[in-house]
Image 1 (cartoon, rainbow, N blue to C red):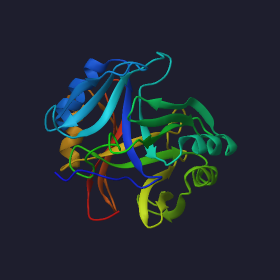
Image 2: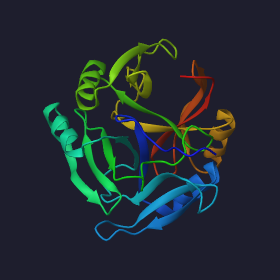
Image 3: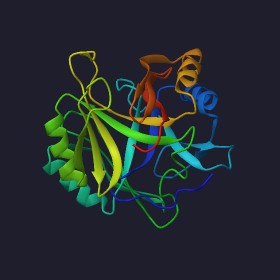
Length: 264
């Protein structure tokens, strides 16, 4: 499998899971995607689990840590590559967001920070040091992240916020049942999506970022996830880029599954 050697600034590069039950999460994602994992120990941080594809020595695809606050919902956090974490932190606050984790060094690997946007949706940024850990070492293949998407009830505000923070350009699309959809771009590169939460979405669902994972057969993967204890929140259906579904894993974290059809 070809290894990713570079991420453009503003592009998603990593995701990690905050889980209240890491053992359950390891089993679920191991059975669903064939992931294994190892523990990365860093003096200044809690132990961090690295998910890999193709065995413990395989390429890294994501991370996991124990949910620090039991009052917070389990979730995946999407990370975006930046060239200056501190400058992004200033831009987030100026645009109306909030700093959740201040910019900090992660050993010799890089510099990170975590934020919440105007509606409270969390995301993180990563500034790698050299070639140590630029992000996921493989993407766009079965069992790896291939897309990230934000759900919001205020499309205009979201477009402004992320445009000011990352310089993203919003391109409007109609992918699914005439839903308003935003394809965010950096130059010609599609980096993320934005879906409008209309009245059909449950009122109690906050807007949030979720990763999508590529699978060979969306229906089979959704069925497999259900058998492993997940809940399907959006059943498999067809959209222009492929066939997709959204599930909630056994701990309550949401993720997407997609069998792509050509280029987005």
